Image 1 (cartoon, one colour):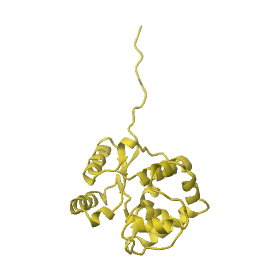
Image 2 (cartoon, rainbow, N blue to C red):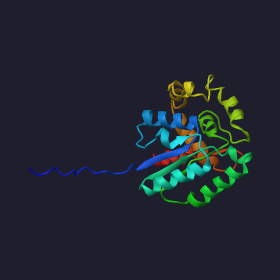
Image 3 (cartoon, rainbow, N blue to C red):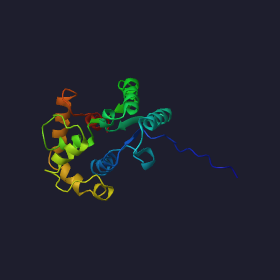
Image 4 (spheres, rainbow, N blue to C red):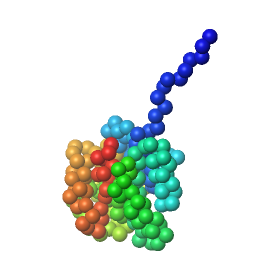
Length: 190
């Protein structure tokens, strides 16, 4: 009797997301669920990571043949010189790489969330200042997993054309102001 040959295509994922932060993780998890995007988001590829770990995960993703979307907050560059140098290196190496999308936000992803409701790119300095204003729209917003894993806040965030509005605001502002978000680059790839 002849053995059956496995003819299944063993493709690597086409798009994976790596990054740092619990808010980023849950935002992207809900985004995938509600928008039907086809990226791979694994807890093993996401967490509270250093820029050195993110660099390693970008390299691993590229070596697997995947397109890599990297999501992280840039505010760490204000108080950690080592992380700032590593972040600058990631930007230098990958900002124009055809298979890497750097979707960072300054000061944090909460600024991207705020753009769903407000047209601003003023200086916030820290994510706490952004969250303070974000709570005007998402009154119980909290950076704790117990809150973020529930999808009610996300549904409120994307109601109507809020996401389209945030996208337009982010692309219009670019990096012209003190605060910015390149999450729109990730949305383009999804």
